[in-house]
Image: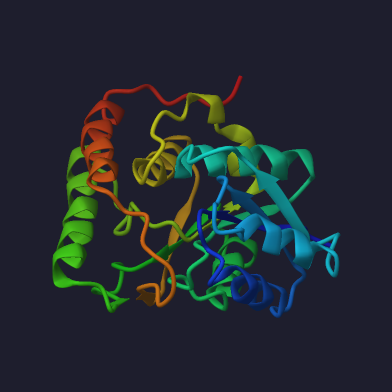
Length: 241
Protein backbone atom coordinates (compact mmCIF):
# COMPACT_ATOMS: atom_id res chain seq x y z
CA UNK A 1 0.00 0.00 0.00
CA UNK A 2 1.20 3.49 -0.83
CA UNK A 3 2.34 5.48 2.16
CA UNK A 4 1.02 9.04 2.49
CA UNK A 5 2.26 11.64 5.00
CA UNK A 6 0.75 15.04 5.81
CA UNK A 7 3.29 17.42 7.35
CA UNK A 8 1.77 20.13 9.54
CA UNK A 9 4.08 22.74 11.12
CA UNK A 10 2.69 24.26 14.31
CA UNK A 11 3.26 27.17 16.64
CA UNK A 12 0.53 27.87 19.20
CA UNK A 13 -2.22 25.83 17.53
CA UNK A 14 -3.90 24.28 20.57
CA UNK A 15 -7.30 25.53 19.37
CA UNK A 16 -7.00 23.59 16.10
CA UNK A 17 -4.65 20.67 16.58
CA UNK A 18 -7.09 18.02 17.81
CA UNK A 19 -9.62 18.79 15.12
CA UNK A 20 -7.17 18.97 12.21
CA UNK A 21 -5.58 15.62 13.11
CA UNK A 22 -9.00 14.01 13.49
CA UNK A 23 -10.09 15.41 10.12
CA UNK A 24 -7.06 13.95 8.33
CA UNK A 25 -7.46 10.56 10.01
CA UNK A 26 -11.15 10.45 8.99
CA UNK A 27 -10.21 10.42 5.30
CA UNK A 28 -10.07 7.20 3.29
CA UNK A 29 -6.61 6.12 2.18
CA UNK A 30 -4.72 5.82 5.46
CA UNK A 31 -3.05 9.22 5.69
CA UNK A 32 -0.37 9.60 8.35
CA UNK A 33 0.42 12.92 10.06
CA UNK A 34 3.73 14.46 11.12
CA UNK A 35 3.46 17.50 13.39
CA UNK A 36 6.55 19.70 13.55
CA UNK A 37 6.16 21.96 16.56
CA UNK A 38 8.45 24.93 17.13
CA UNK A 39 8.32 25.02 20.91
CA UNK A 40 4.71 26.23 21.20
CA UNK A 41 4.29 27.76 24.67
CA UNK A 42 0.53 27.02 24.55
CA UNK A 43 1.08 23.24 24.85
CA UNK A 44 0.36 22.18 21.27
CA UNK A 45 3.01 19.44 21.44
CA UNK A 46 1.58 18.08 24.69
CA UNK A 47 -1.80 17.63 23.01
CA UNK A 48 -0.16 15.77 20.11
CA UNK A 49 1.65 13.46 22.55
CA UNK A 50 -1.68 12.71 24.24
CA UNK A 51 -3.24 11.84 20.87
CA UNK A 52 -0.31 9.62 19.91
CA UNK A 53 -1.38 7.09 22.53
CA UNK A 54 -4.37 6.12 20.39
CA UNK A 55 -2.59 6.29 17.00
CA UNK A 56 1.11 5.55 17.53
CA UNK A 57 1.66 4.24 14.00
CA UNK A 58 -0.06 7.14 12.25
CA UNK A 59 0.67 10.25 14.32
CA UNK A 60 4.23 11.48 14.63
CA UNK A 61 5.83 14.50 16.30
CA UNK A 62 9.09 16.39 15.93
CA UNK A 63 9.69 19.06 18.56
CA UNK A 64 12.07 21.93 17.86
CA UNK A 65 13.26 24.64 20.21
CA UNK A 66 11.92 28.01 19.11
CA UNK A 67 10.54 29.44 15.88
CA UNK A 68 12.99 28.29 13.21
CA UNK A 69 10.93 29.12 10.12
CA UNK A 70 8.33 27.47 7.94
CA UNK A 71 10.82 26.34 5.34
CA UNK A 72 13.15 24.62 7.80
CA UNK A 73 10.16 22.81 9.33
CA UNK A 74 9.13 21.38 5.97
CA UNK A 75 12.70 20.49 5.02
CA UNK A 76 13.04 18.58 8.27
CA UNK A 77 9.74 16.85 7.52
CA UNK A 78 10.78 15.94 3.97
CA UNK A 79 13.99 14.38 5.24
CA UNK A 80 12.04 12.37 7.81
CA UNK A 81 9.46 11.27 5.22
CA UNK A 82 12.12 10.02 2.82
CA UNK A 83 13.87 8.10 5.59
CA UNK A 84 10.58 6.43 6.54
CA UNK A 85 9.70 5.43 2.98
CA UNK A 86 6.64 7.61 2.24
CA UNK A 87 5.48 7.72 -1.38
CA UNK A 88 3.44 10.96 -1.23
CA UNK A 89 4.20 13.88 1.07
CA UNK A 90 1.81 16.77 1.70
CA UNK A 91 2.17 20.27 3.12
CA UNK A 92 -0.86 21.61 4.99
CA UNK A 93 -1.66 24.33 7.53
CA UNK A 94 -3.04 23.46 10.96
CA UNK A 95 -5.75 26.14 11.03
CA UNK A 96 -8.31 24.71 8.53
CA UNK A 97 -7.51 27.36 5.93
CA UNK A 98 -6.88 24.25 3.82
CA UNK A 99 -9.81 21.85 3.72
CA UNK A 100 -8.52 18.38 4.68
CA UNK A 101 -10.96 16.83 2.18
CA UNK A 102 -8.90 18.40 -0.59
CA UNK A 103 -5.97 16.14 0.32
CA UNK A 104 -7.80 13.48 -1.69
CA UNK A 105 -7.89 15.73 -4.76
CA UNK A 106 -4.19 16.59 -4.49
CA UNK A 107 -3.38 12.90 -4.14
CA UNK A 108 -5.49 12.03 -7.20
CA UNK A 109 -3.71 14.69 -9.27
CA UNK A 110 -0.40 12.92 -8.62
CA UNK A 111 -1.42 9.27 -8.31
CA UNK A 112 -4.04 9.16 -11.09
CA UNK A 113 -3.48 12.21 -13.32
CA UNK A 114 0.27 12.06 -13.81
CA UNK A 115 1.43 15.13 -11.88
CA UNK A 116 4.68 15.05 -9.94
CA UNK A 117 3.57 17.93 -7.73
CA UNK A 118 -0.01 19.05 -7.07
CA UNK A 119 -0.70 22.56 -5.77
CA UNK A 120 -3.90 23.53 -3.97
CA UNK A 121 -4.43 26.77 -5.85
CA UNK A 122 -6.38 29.85 -4.74
CA UNK A 123 -5.92 31.63 -8.06
CA UNK A 124 -6.07 29.21 -10.99
CA UNK A 125 -9.88 29.69 -11.18
CA UNK A 126 -10.17 33.38 -10.39
CA UNK A 127 -9.76 34.25 -6.68
CA UNK A 128 -11.05 31.63 -4.23
CA UNK A 129 -10.42 33.10 -0.78
CA UNK A 130 -12.94 33.51 2.05
CA UNK A 131 -12.72 36.01 4.94
CA UNK A 132 -9.41 37.60 4.03
CA UNK A 133 -9.21 41.41 4.09
CA UNK A 134 -9.04 42.81 0.57
CA UNK A 135 -5.55 44.22 1.20
CA UNK A 136 -4.20 40.74 1.91
CA UNK A 137 -5.90 39.22 -1.13
CA UNK A 138 -4.42 41.92 -3.36
CA UNK A 139 -0.94 41.47 -1.82
CA UNK A 140 -1.03 37.70 -2.22
CA UNK A 141 -2.46 37.75 -5.75
CA UNK A 142 0.02 40.28 -7.06
CA UNK A 143 2.90 38.53 -5.28
CA UNK A 144 2.15 35.47 -7.40
CA UNK A 145 1.85 37.67 -10.52
CA UNK A 146 5.26 39.18 -9.70
CA UNK A 147 6.79 35.70 -9.38
CA UNK A 148 5.32 34.59 -12.71
CA UNK A 149 6.70 37.69 -14.40
CA UNK A 150 10.22 37.55 -12.94
CA UNK A 151 10.70 33.78 -13.22
CA UNK A 152 8.66 33.23 -16.39
CA UNK A 153 6.91 30.56 -14.37
CA UNK A 154 3.33 29.61 -15.20
CA UNK A 155 1.89 28.61 -11.84
CA UNK A 156 -0.88 30.91 -10.64
CA UNK A 157 -0.51 30.33 -6.90
CA UNK A 158 3.25 30.26 -6.38
CA UNK A 159 3.05 30.99 -2.64
CA UNK A 160 0.50 28.22 -1.95
CA UNK A 161 1.24 26.12 1.13
CA UNK A 162 -1.10 23.24 0.30
CA UNK A 163 0.96 20.84 -1.81
CA UNK A 164 1.43 17.16 -2.63
CA UNK A 165 4.90 15.95 -3.63
CA UNK A 166 5.70 12.58 -5.09
CA UNK A 167 8.68 10.87 -3.52
CA UNK A 168 10.61 11.23 -6.79
CA UNK A 169 10.46 15.04 -6.61
CA UNK A 170 11.87 15.19 -3.08
CA UNK A 171 14.52 12.59 -3.84
CA UNK A 172 15.69 14.48 -6.92
CA UNK A 173 15.83 17.96 -5.37
CA UNK A 174 18.93 19.07 -3.53
CA UNK A 175 17.03 20.05 -0.40
CA UNK A 176 20.23 21.29 1.23
CA UNK A 177 20.43 24.01 -1.44
CA UNK A 178 17.00 25.51 -0.61
CA UNK A 179 17.71 29.00 0.69
CA UNK A 180 14.40 30.72 1.51
CA UNK A 181 12.84 29.98 4.90
CA UNK A 182 9.55 31.91 5.00
CA UNK A 183 6.83 31.97 2.36
CA UNK A 184 9.52 32.38 -0.27
CA UNK A 185 10.24 28.73 0.45
CA UNK A 186 6.99 27.80 -1.27
CA UNK A 187 8.01 29.69 -4.39
CA UNK A 188 11.48 28.15 -4.41
CA UNK A 189 10.19 24.59 -4.10
CA UNK A 190 7.76 24.97 -7.01
CA UNK A 191 10.27 26.73 -9.23
CA UNK A 192 12.95 24.13 -8.46
CA UNK A 193 10.57 21.30 -9.32
CA UNK A 194 9.70 22.95 -12.62
CA UNK A 195 13.34 23.60 -13.54
CA UNK A 196 14.13 19.94 -12.84
CA UNK A 197 11.51 18.94 -15.39
CA UNK A 198 8.68 17.82 -13.11
CA UNK A 199 5.02 18.21 -14.00
CA UNK A 200 3.09 20.59 -11.72
CA UNK A 201 -0.71 20.55 -11.66
CA UNK A 202 -2.80 23.23 -9.94
CA UNK A 203 -5.94 21.94 -8.24
CA UNK A 204 -8.49 24.68 -7.52
CA UNK A 205 -9.37 25.00 -3.83
CA UNK A 206 -11.28 27.42 -1.64
CA UNK A 207 -8.98 28.96 0.97
CA UNK A 208 -10.71 29.99 4.22
CA UNK A 209 -9.13 32.37 6.72
CA UNK A 210 -8.48 30.81 10.12
CA UNK A 211 -11.35 30.97 12.64
CA UNK A 212 -9.29 30.06 15.72
CA UNK A 213 -5.81 31.10 16.83
CA UNK A 214 -3.68 33.90 15.40
CA UNK A 215 -1.97 34.35 12.03
CA UNK A 216 1.81 33.94 11.82
CA UNK A 217 2.20 36.30 8.82
CA UNK A 218 4.71 39.16 8.96
CA UNK A 219 6.06 41.83 6.62
CA UNK A 220 9.51 40.19 6.73
CA UNK A 221 8.06 37.12 5.06
CA UNK A 222 7.14 39.17 1.98
CA UNK A 223 10.50 40.96 1.95
CA UNK A 224 12.38 37.68 1.82
CA UNK A 225 10.15 36.46 -1.00
CA UNK A 226 10.57 39.67 -3.04
CA UNK A 227 14.37 39.71 -2.98
CA UNK A 228 14.68 35.93 -3.01
CA UNK A 229 12.75 35.66 -6.27
CA UNK A 230 15.15 38.09 -7.95
CA UNK A 231 18.15 35.97 -6.93
CA UNK A 232 16.33 32.76 -7.83
CA UNK A 233 15.99 34.01 -11.41
CA UNK A 234 19.78 33.76 -11.87
CA UNK A 235 20.48 30.64 -9.84
CA UNK A 236 21.42 27.38 -11.51
CA UNK A 237 19.08 24.61 -10.38
CA UNK A 238 20.72 21.20 -10.25
CA UNK A 239 19.44 17.83 -9.05
CA UNK A 240 20.85 16.18 -5.97
CA UNK A 241 24.22 14.61 -6.69
